[in-house]
Image (cartoon, rainbow, N blue to C red):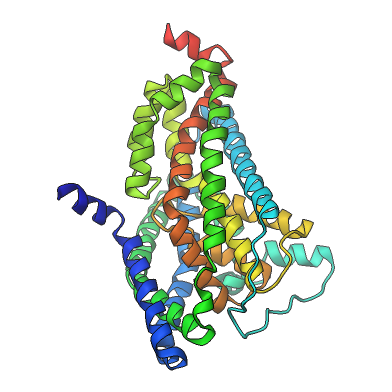
Length: 412
């Protein structure tokens, strides 16, 4: 009884979301087009989310950068950490792309009657300028300038870090603002079962029961590719880090982090288990104490793979070609940004979903609910890869930093 209560509490947010989606689907089936009367509930939820997302991104990124400790000793280690994190994120994303191309996602139904937003035809330089910057401060406050806001937030964070003692009050403001905005997002997400339920009811009621099964193939593809990545590639990373001994050491001490990640659906909540496991895997303290906490908010193999599958689903919804080289390169860039922007909390991928939809120019009101539903359903597996990837990455970082005999020397 106690275990079932604990399990429900752990997954309560996902369970309520699934309940809302299920109830909405039933209402759509029963009442058909008449269910459009509750669509404003979904609109209200999305509008609340839209208004909170801009300040959330600013405070999250700026406060994270401003809180970094400046140290020459950690300079080389920090570089290695970033290279390993970036490398595994790109590998996982490319693997999911291969999966999507081998098992393409087809969507015959049209989720929305609204046309895809037209992209203004300009030269490459102008497009890059518009994507990376805004020509006035107030334009940063629009979700259409998402990438420009992210870059600005990084600059603010670094400037605050360089300000030393004189910038202490501002850093406290950033940290305080970050906490306030996270709590605001928690409050808004409490209405997600109703908001997404209303949207799903509308989709089912308008477009009929053919909507069911639309997510079956992408979800099956995601879980299959992720399971393959988890077993095969994590084993490969462990072997690269320490040979056969590294492989044995990783899987022997990996059970607790795996169960913690699945049980909490939170990368941050898994940090203590990861640190303990990394210690048992003989990862030096100065490496594990940097790589594990830094990995929770910045390193997300599972989220990179879910980002690809969500983009592929949205492209299929609107009948667009996902295999275009520029589309794939853009998707890779989005996955890297998502790894930095997302928080280590359950269902933290909404920022990345909005960024992807904005960059590709799809109608937000129709594409976001579908992306959020897919994100909710893949969250447990995504968290497993996000959190557990930090442990095996810490082993690879130690291998690069301390040489190939690090594990043998530590075991003696």
